[in-house]
Amino acid sequence: MPTITIETNVDRSIANQSFQEKLSTTVAEFYDFPVMYITVAVHCQKLLFGGTDSPAAYMEIKSISGFGEKENKAASKILCELFETKLGVAPNRLYIYFNSVTLEDVGVEGNTLAN
Image (cartoon, helix red, strand yellow):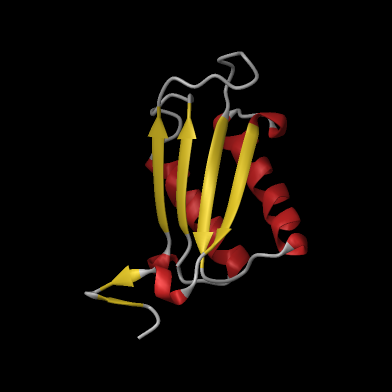
């Protein structure tokens, strides 16, 4: 159930549905989740990173599992490569926040995943 939110200054014509689909499949394969459970939101806006408006982004990945030092380092490498090749965002201009949530923290279908 990874939920991914991205804030970037890359134009929407580049950070488009094709990019979202590629990110979804990349995350699905890495975390071994079906794509149908992955949500990706991309917000294109003005963004300064390090005092410049060169291509940059920050993203948050929330999930009920799959995080740890080893996993986060491996995911960071894969995601940095994807952002560089697809969006032109250099690895030193991308921050990734890995946030674990509990089953009780996720609501769906009028309930939580804990039930």
